[in-house]
Amino acid sequence: MVKDQAFVEHAKVHSNYYGTSKEWVNSALNQGIDVILEIDWQGARSIQQVGLKNTSIFILPPSLRELERRLKDRGDDPKIVQRRMRDAINEITHYGEYDYLIINDDFRVAADTLTSIIKQPSYEMENQSAKLKPLLAELMPK
Image 1 (spheres, rainbow, N blue to C red):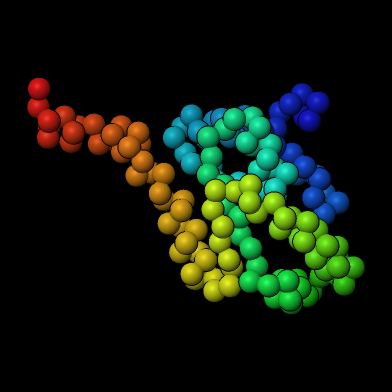
Image 2 (cartoon, rainbow, N blue to C red; image 1 turned 120 degrees about the vertical axis):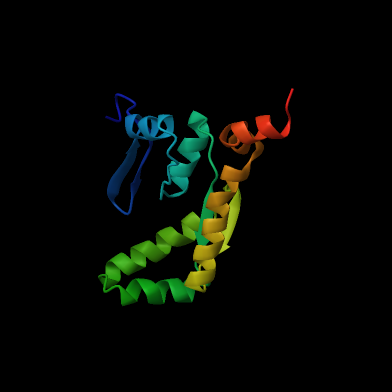
């Protein structure tokens, strides 16, 4: 599929390969369905390069110490925790390539912030004017 360019993005992350199907994304978008991708900086960069309209959000841990604690609490093998910590430090350096930045310190606050960012585009002029076309026609008769 990589050779056939069937992905909008693909990358090797933590020794595993991941990708997002172009066919699936285009099908959802053509049906008016918003698509949310949980991808790393490499995938986000690929999305930018293919020119898909998007809103990018980078979620940071409150500290490296807290990130390490969370990884350990999941019960991962210590070697995996070490590798993920090393990779996280590299990933964090890419936060400036995103549109929004959220600190995941208090889960409820982070979730509310994420929700407000996701809902925002539905209120943009193009989306609202299409959605409210009958009302606008009624309010502004010819």
